Length: 387
Ligand code: KIV
Ligand code: ZN
Image (cartoon, rainbow, N blue to C red; front, side, top):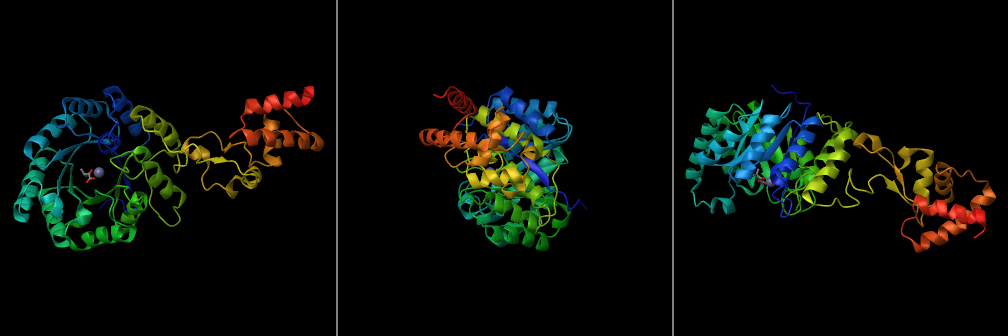
């Protein structure tokens, strides 16, 4: 019986994340990101799709060789050639995993033109083959959330009997919603024979902006592995963002009593590195790792923050690897924030001095979007020389 209070974090930045058009990373960049993931306590790193190219094969093999704690996983379609190639790459890891998948929804079944029975046989044969190579096998029915219930339950049972140790339920096109996500996992666990002997995973895409909510709901339903990427990198609107689920579980542990092994103080650094190497900027207001996630400009907020940070922040910036809250000086800032900022810069002002500077500061802030420390120093010099 696995620890039901622990959620396994499966990072697929280097596989699903890299599949984002334009997000290709070099060999050395992949090694760097894999090392950061391993060091921050991610449980499983999906390092690539070894059959996709020689470059991917080499990257997965090298990530596997250098791995420390994390399980190293490679992706393979449901055929022996893919699975063998995947094994050749991941076998160098201390803890390897083969992840094999096939599209099970009506739309996806039409692509290889297999009948339901033929696909079921294929699933049996390929999972058995993978399990003969590796004792850690993950199986995914791609587009599970648009697969007929009876067929989904049937193929999940086949995969478990054939030796899969993790069953991943992908919401490949970001179609599900939180209640449905929880119900689907719960129903599978309750009805499929053997379900209590494997781990169920959730793999959500963000097409409707619900990937994080759907992943957390799946955990409520019994999933104990969340598949995610740094910064939510991934095809189309991306995947569940690792930093969001990890911080949600940490900050709201009172109502979501599951833990992860991730050292959250490393989140900001890895977010910036993934953004740089993938060439995908992080939106300013992105939860947890956006430039503005811990920034305050309005006077009321700044005043509240100066008195007690919890007034407008539910997490401490240090918990995600930021040294401090960013008090942004702009036209919405008030006297209290200006006084505090100037004090930090070495100017301790009496009330009447502050009033004068405040008028000049507001005039400057009206012209500029943000007033930086150098601007304030210049303002103080002008004030002192009477300019
Ligand atoms: O979104 C998806 O279905 C996938 C599978 C390969 C797991 O990425
Ligand atoms: Zn995916």
